[in-house]
Length: 175
Image (cartoon, rainbow, N blue to C red):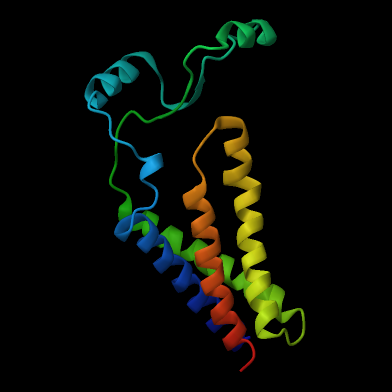
């Protein structure tokens, strides 16, 4: 149990540190956080016309024929909008939640590896990489197929973070 707890804590710390490097130091996610010089006008317009929520525009109105609406939208602009009525500073709470999720994810990875008996260093590394790539394929990449979002940085995050976790677990679990 001690081995699993230490594996989870250190793995969580590795994931958390990589996320900090990825978003705050290197910021490989600039494609998903672009600046618009018209942001004040856009936000004012959204605030006047939308309730808080997530939107896909254009979209068929309730009761409207979805196929006809889609055909009419072809060749025209479209957007996904995640709109909030006010920005709040929840950074501290979000960091704590993120770190706890990282510990749980790292602990689950360690638990899977421990269920294999005595996995080799290579098995721990490649299993961790596989988990990272499965996560990438299942959410960011799958969404990019439908919503044309950039995902190269998500692939880098998956390979780097879970590769580092795999290196740690490959060493630690064999001690």
